[in-house]
Image 1 (cartoon, one colour):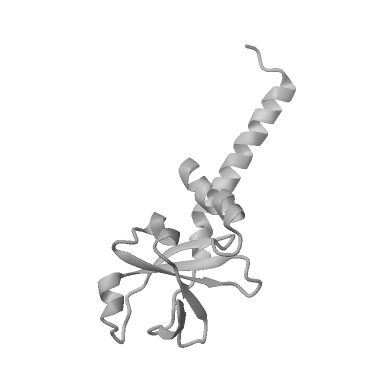
Image 2 (image 1 turned 135 degrees about the vertical axis):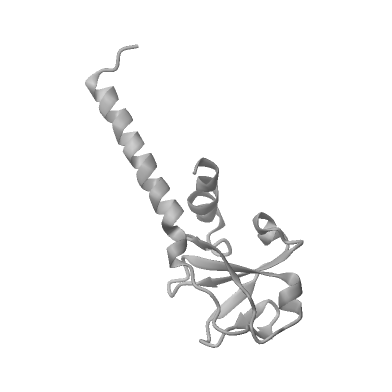
Length: 131
């Protein structure tokens, strides 16, 4: 099959878009934040860090992509409550409540999984399959 100039241009545009999105997605964790000092339990699944930032502890099913048998996952939102940062911690480390809680960055989400689950799937989860 012979490519006509319009088809070649379309193919090149799609390739450029693919690599642009890939770079954007792979580098997204530079925006992730971590809790400052140990989290203090407020109520139910809500915790606050030393900077008074609210962290929501995810339930088992909302943590399936993060090995919920081994880790607790916490999520906080940006000021517009659109994007979110996720951190994880070994359950044994968190349950011992020590002055230093070794949180690990999990991922930065362009769309919060709690508030925008459909957009989160397409913007944050689905690209993982492709990239």
